[in-house]
Length: 255
Image 1: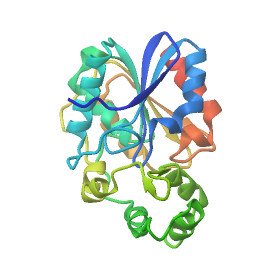
Image 2: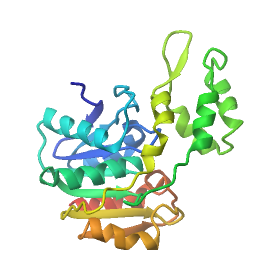
Image 3: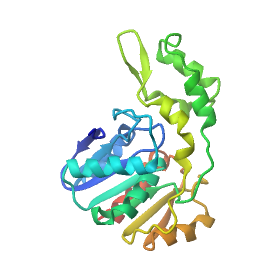
Image 4: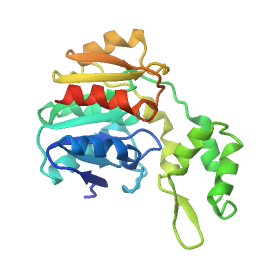
């Protein structure tokens, strides 16, 4: 039985953070340090096929929830606080509805329970165009990605996954093959009639379209105690674009 990789910082009440698609726990390092300073034991988790966690052909939310359940059992955690962004938010939502007895409070960052049509096609095409026998430096990888991804910030985010596999060869940390084949799984909806009765906070970026006004009744149906707040001057990467306000809202809710 493989246990997903994590980095644990701080001592206190367990707070598990789940990153988004193509991300890793490491993306949340600076916020994790703040939570740790304020009395939390923060678990920065790499979900399967991401970061330093194991690679597997199969990839869907039921599997991600199972991975998280085994992780919580392995570390003997109880009544965890759960914070998930985007894909991680979908994992967190499903986990809370399946294992409500293990969850104290739930924070979902910029994703709703609805179905999202498959996207990220350009990103996947760009990543699959990289040939590490040709793109042998980070600079060359960036130039290759730039052919299909003009946004520098997106390329920098993806480049965090590039590491030195051997002395002479770079590689991606994520399992690109599985993520490409299972891209449709990332947008699936939370199953109907699933409910988490616990305290829940949804945070959305003011400049992001991921949680719309139309999503609010659906959020309330699945999460009757949900509070929805908007983070100003931030898009989908709200925790990075306005970390100060994101942290303030998350911390107030958790304490």
